[in-house]
Length: 497
Image (cartoon, rainbow, N blue to C red; front, side, top):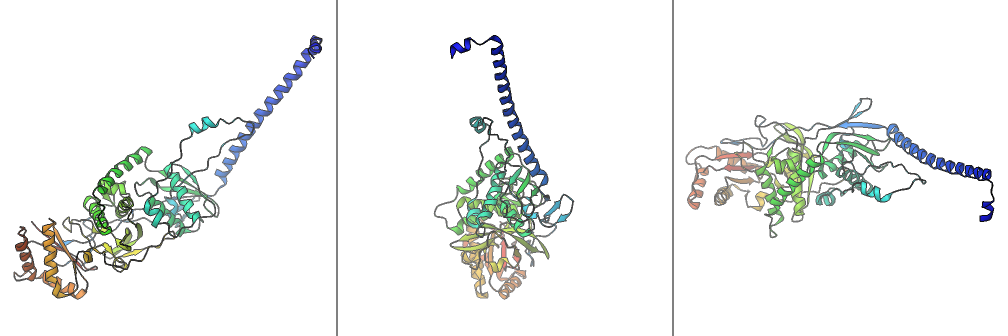
């Protein structure tokens, strides 16, 4: 073979080289064409998905808030609602969906703030293109999982099937990774299923209890079923991290006072009083619908109160859930949010927002709505059913604040002893209030008549003077205000030192 090559003429060698060059150039052209073709196909597919999928845009404001309870007076007060002149009344705007044609529907409210998850990313690939996997792995950020709370998993997904749970976690993971577009499983959420959208949105909002992360608008894509969401964020990554850090520090401070010997009742009471003493109700502010707004900034709507209580229960592994619905006060019904909490194996209702200190109540914390059964909460609250979890029945009262502390008055003959005991206990604990509750309307009215009697021989003054004599704690027995809740039949005396 070597000899044959040597004997080739110069012309023959030139011809051979030309043929080889042509073959090489042709092969290079094929490779380049294949790569370019692959890129074009990939881009075209992506464009088709974005342009052909039907989409709708939704906007929503979810200021779930409520009227405040109770006011102080020397005379009888017939309502537990805070006066309209005392604060701005909270309202919740109903969410709406706007299609590209501009048509308004009542439907996408729920999905509007839905928290998205991992968004599908179209990548250009070609079998003829070398893949540098190491470089790609180094350049791509690590996907983060959303830190789902204890109660979201254990108590707020009890009716959800596996596909619905997957959609929720997909959305939450997408939000955790700040995806602007999130692909969700097809065949799970129908565009026309308004209730399911609303309930899914509630779960997302409850899961995002820490911070109010999303803007109140979103766009979703799909034909019969929703297959993807586009979301905008109201907070930057740095702001979210800062708020989470501050909230964690506050929760840790609260939890540092939790003792292993504390009962479920004591934990719930402690959380209730910590929130109510620190936070003040408002319907205005950027973070009022989050636990951060309530526990760190000290101002929140009813939604912020409920989420703050949920966060503390999560930290304590205390079973809890959020309840949404409406509340009626001063003859007006508004959207509202509160909690259910499980104590000693039984569920109770708790509304920290309505027990919050108000100007009318002299700045003292009420306990009217601490661990009440459904029978009591339904007198002024109406829950909305949720498709993904059921509100457990609350029919017990053994963990109710008044029952637990022997402050329930059943007979007229019990009034003097129980009221005196309540006042003495408050004085010894350096509290400025003493509360009792009546099991019967006739006994409640009898006590009110007694309270309204300003004569010097009124039994109320005798009870107060007797409590002063027994405790030797100086307070003004002639200047005691009271707050009444005519629905729950409670009376709270505000003591003046």
